[in-house]
Structures are given as structure tokens and as C-alpha cells.
Length: 516
Ligand code: UN1
Image (cartoon, rainbow, N blue to C red; front, top):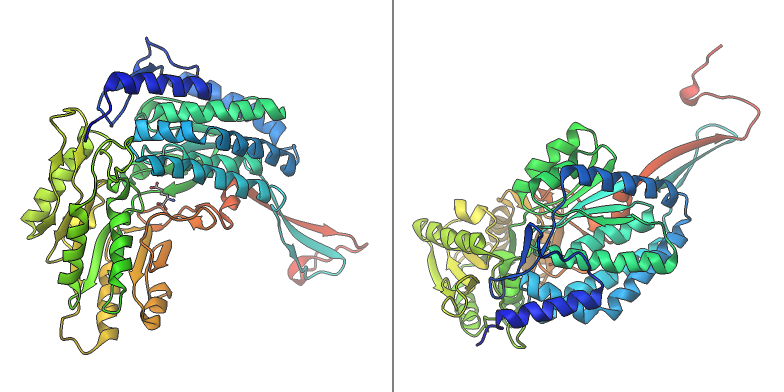
């Protein structure tokens, strides 16, 4: 296993940035773009001041005034062009995601595919932003609902989906008539600048107004300037629950709209009837894929006592064969953690799990430290826990899978056992994604029912990660309640107007009120 030499990586990155049209590289910039692949700095860029954020929001708001009156299907043409450019530059942008976020090649490319898919969805949507006609209680009256553009959308995104999360928001926002101002994670500034270069080129090609899309770079101060600006009608924030707790009250204080996509603590219930071959494959991808750094990563398995040992043995065996290393090498399945703090979180969580009576059945160690001292590669860890203790309740953004059991090996009441599993499943503060592995239709349907999983996403015989963009994406409880991407998630980016038209010669009042 060799890690790509850092100088090569810098050269590769610079030529990718060149091809994608990124011009914002500044050797004197205050922000270093770093690669978790080697742990070294790539290039430097300049961060924005709070005052500059204000100017950018002003320009975005000016663009809004023109864009909101542009017919939605014409707005769709911009997103269509963006989708074409993404297809053209998929290889480069996917590789840049791998370099900057440490995702393996197919996941870097998969992220760009997710962008292309949401562009397609948004283009179709640009002709389908439909409202309702509602029966009026008054004669000669018509009621209807219209959806109008909302205003500037502020997007805050995390390092782990450095391009797709922006696109879920931007593609919908742009067809809905809203400019976007994006504050990406300071850990993934280059991929953000690359997206910005592509959308700027798309706008130029279709003759759309300038400033429909902007990027603001920097740390918390820049984010706060964006979040506090009353012209930012919607703040769509993806990241940790801690970030959501900081952002939400500030936006609420000015009655701005919020779309929150925060932490997950996603589980799989594995029942006695589960197809274990399929279950193990589903679990290993969801738990170890993306080095455990998806908000949808599988973090808990709740398995029936009668199959627990067999399942653990099989997962441990699969973990033992996972190729860990440079995400740029073909064949690697587990790339690096994003940085040292992330590694510390992994190591601390494993210490706590052991202190809580957990047994590490597989993995749990840092690897490749001698090849790249500043990069953090770890073995995905499988930990058997006696109970769902405090550390299991927390989202640790690293590949740690906790296994708990339900029922008993000789149990005679499968329905009661399953309800015990469901109670355990829902007994965490987060509510993003979930899954059940079973061939029993009663269990599958109960899991999906009102008394089943309390998450925004609930799957049967599929792990909790890797959702398609056609569905609404998001979750409940500390996950924040927001929904992005498919279904009717577009409505969050528009304002609803209820209109009543009187085409009669009378003026009947609603509720039968007489007045004069
Ligand atoms: C995230 O980790 O922030 O369902 C989003 C999935 C991806 C999105 C994850 N489509 O895993």
C-alpha cells in the first residue's frame, strides 16, 4: 500500500483546478486547503470578511429581483447547463472530492453523479412547481395556492459531502427562483470553488444574471454573517447537531426559515429470518464505507440474540479483508479520516466503549501512520456492547459500529422481541436513517409503520446509507426535521401564497359574517 507522494498530489490538484476553471488560488491566502490523503497542504485561498459576506448577499439579493421574474422553465435551463457541465467534468470533480475529502474514487464519482441526478430532477421540476385549486365556500369565488420564489438561500455544508449537498440545495433553489450563497466547510474549499466555477460558466452560457451563486469562505465568523443577514430568507445547514444548535436560534431570532440536516445515529435491526449474506454486505458498506463519515453511516446494529454471534463473526471477517489506504488507489475501500480531531474522536469513543463494558471484535487501530504521519487512516471497528450506553447514544463521525442484542436465543414471543428491538432503535436523540433486515413481512411492515422506526428514512433489506435523490432526504429529532432533494422538498425553497378571487358581483363574507 503506497500513499500518493504529496508533491504529485499538489501537481494533480493544480491541473484539475485549472481544467475546472478555478482561478481563486492565492499563494498569500490565509486559508490552506489540505488533503486528508497525505495530511499535507495543497494550495492556499483567501477567506472572506464579514463585510464582504454582506456585499455578496447584497449582490445575490439584486440577482433575486431579476431571477424571481424569470419563468421557472427558463430558470431550469441554467440547471440543465450545470448538469451538462457536471457530466463533462465528472472525472475531475470526482477526483478532487477524493483528494480533498478523502473519499474513494467510486464515491467521489458517485457524489458527482448525485449532483447530475439532482440537476435532472430540478430541470423537470422547473415545469412542475404546481399549486392547488381549492373549493371556495362562497359563490363566484375561486381559491388557489401559488408558490413564489423565496429569496436568497444560505447554504452551509460539511466536509463529508463537499459537493452533493450544495447541489441538492442549489439545483432546487435556482429553479425555484432563489440565488444561493454557500459557506462550505473550511476543510473542503477547493471542491466548493470548483462547483462555483462550473455554475458561473453555466450562467454565462445561458445568459443568466450574475451572482445567482456565490461562495463565501472562512470559519465561524463568515458563517455567522451569513446566518444573521435578514436578506437570507432560508438557511439550509448540513452538519453536526452542535452546529445546528448554534445556527438555529440565530435564524429563528430574525424569523428566517431553516432547513436543518444534522447528525444521525443510524441503526439496523437484524432479525432471525434475515438473509445474512445480504445483511453482512449491507452492513459493511453502510458502516465502513466513506470511513464512517456519512450522516447516514450505520453506527448501531440491534441483532436478535439467536443470530448475534454468527453475524458478528461474519462482519469481523469482512472487516479483516477491507483494503484501507489512499482513496486514489483502485481497490481501496476505506480512505482516511478527515483530520487529527476526527481521529481523536474515534480513539476516545473506543476508550469510552471499552469503559462501558464493550468488547472490540475487529479493527480499532490507526494504520499507515509511518507512511503519512499527518494523515489519519483507521481500521473500521466492530464493538459488541452490553447496553446502548452513553457513547452509543452519541454520533462519532468515524467508522465504529456498535452491536447490541435483543430477545433471547430461546425466546418464544417474536413480536414482543421485535418491539423490544424497536424501542432500542428509537431510544437515541437522533432520527435520520434506519433499516431492518428481515424476510418476515410482519416485522418489515411494523418497522415502517407509525409505531416503527422514528427516522426520516426507513429501509428494508438495505443499509441506512446511500439514499437516492428522488426521495426527500432528512430526519427527525436532533437531526433537525429538514428535508432536501426529492419528493416535495422544493417547497422549502419557495413561499406559499393563498389567493382568493371574487368573480361575482356580490361580496359574501367568509363564515357567513354579515357586515352592514
Ligand atoms: C450526508 O452524509 O451528509 O444517503 C449525506 C446517503 C447520501 C447522502 C449522505 N445520499 O448516504
